[in-house]
Length: 332
Image (cartoon, rainbow, N blue to C red; front, side, top):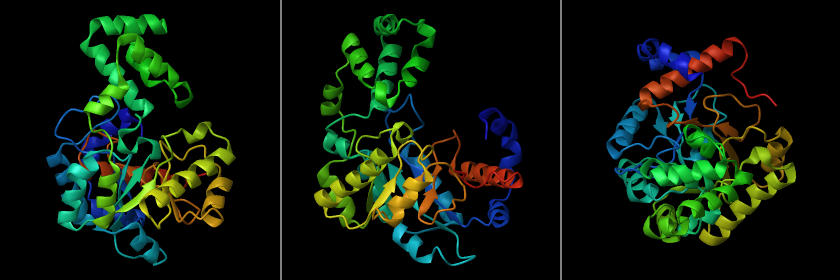
């Protein structure tokens, strides 16, 4: 739903009964996902998407638990053929960020809520930084330092008022430009990683597994799949899962597409599920029906600047509107 339309409809959406929306939709399974939770501002994220504070995240959980029973991916797979069925949610977290161990997992463990954490192989142990996080750090430095702002604008040959939009538009295959801009303004990404715990460590990942959480793959370095050939898509999925299996003794094969599954051909998804040894593939298009068993779309809970209940109501309401015109299913 367009942001302008959503804001206009907010008063109406807030007044709706979620139980009724769920019944009308027939969609009893929800796949909400987040990235991280922090009580402090995170410069590497704050200019990209919303980061919930601990109390906000706990409030979200309480709202979700009023309507859905939390289950693991394996439990969902076991009961997905049951028609009607109970209302369930499978909670997941992308990018393998440090807050998953320091705050999220202990809270989930305390409440008995299963979850899956999807990791980028090259970022584990703070070995490298996601190119979009570099973009956020550049924007942060430009806001804090007028000289840096001037230098970046001059380097890109753009007006200063276009700087932040231009940085955010730098794509995966242009990521070397972010390194060049960092050098231009003296921003040392490696030093930032040394002094800030951005990602999970191997020790923390093993602890998450010991606590009973699922670990899945999210590509080697958060590549944009829409820019890959089909063979490379398959290689990325299989190699990232295999690496985690070998490093951490994981026996599952779960994969969440980075960014979005848009642009991934149906034949690739079917191959991975039928012949590639992948148990489940997850996207991020919100509440949508898919025509391929084992391929499921998730709901990004940081999508709107709203609490969980309003976000979910918006998603169900949008789903019902789209169903009226036949746009509630993924098309290939």
